[in-house]
Length: 521
Image 1 (tube, rainbow, N blue to C red):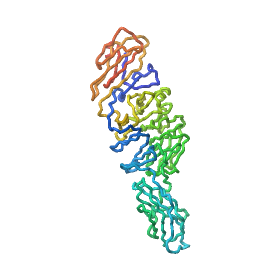
Image 2 (image 1 turned 180 degrees about the horizontal axis):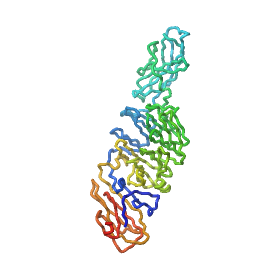
Image 3 (image 1 turned 90 degrees about the vertical axis):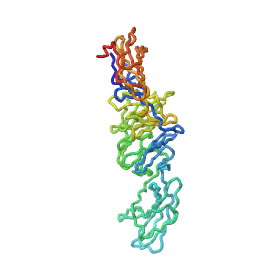
Image 4 (image 1 turned 90 degrees about the horizontal axis):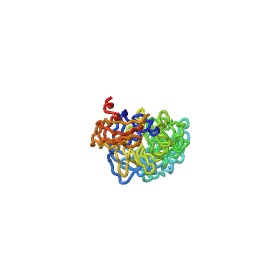
């Protein structure tokens, strides 16, 4: 007697005759969440695009799309803003307006001149001035070059000229004027003395009217490099991106500022980034890295001594507990325990290479890694389930040019053609799945007399059920009545038996036996 329950997915690396009883040679368009066979629900169209897209992002109730590969991250601040890399120079989306992320700085130094009065040689000090631009989003630029030095003492006004107007493209509406002060220890720092509306008019620093306030914060607020890519959001207000081998971090809670003093350099070209906990997983064309810390100036980089390069930036997925990516050897996850080739026991290198992992466009659903791939004329979706004690693989007869995970709802959205669809939408009718058992190889030749499937209908569709029984590779019977004890043809013997199900029903078990009485045992 053969009885199959519970059910599992594929393990292509293992010969079909050596699989566990519930494992599959083929598992297509199927969910295996309860040990039963369940169909994936049909996708639901949520948005019609004017053209196909390679990146999508759900911003509140609005869908944003791009024809190329970009990275989008929400602001690490209270305001509702998005930051984008990959679409030309880095950008910020504030409300419905898109701006360059870089805040330009004044390029010309101020000219400072003393007003009427004599400098007291006993109380004199050397002072300098600079100024910054500030946007309506409260982003402050780097300062202008320092002004000329003045020997100055209390009671003398200073006139500042040479202010320039900011360029167009950024909502710069204010400027902040800073004056230097030297401490008793000889340290010279710049302090705010005045904020005013943007103007090219001169400014008179009236002695006694403009006491020093906070220190200049933006001295190292370098603009993000034009080629910044792979943007990810991190805890503690940080964001990270890369250019070539250089890993960049923004000033905490200041995503417009990317100080060069925070740059870390890898040995290999960076392919993409992922975040888990307070660490960044850095995938490269060589060995991966983990960069961890609580602030940009405390980040430390560790190279993981495994030769597992990333072959597709679009295949990098946050699984919640780790970052997954495709390597030439298989699927890799990076977490607190380092890097693991998690598909090692599931699929061989040759089988993996046939899926063309460099073509992966990936996302996650219910903790599972899902990758649309193109291998010659074949387009499909690979699903790797690592959530249980026994990992397995299934496939879906679909394709995607972009995927997006909505963390708030747990939904997976993807682009097929010019439509954005929701995967396995809760209110959609069930589709139809195909599941084929392992090869049951007997020591001698036998004939099974009856077949039975324990199955229930699934809401939303009329029940459909077909079971095909193969003996020594030949189709011997087709059964369309679930739950009934169905007689099988006689007159032959076989060593190798297989069962293939095509259905939209929930199947808990299937059995092959010599007689109806044997089924009852």
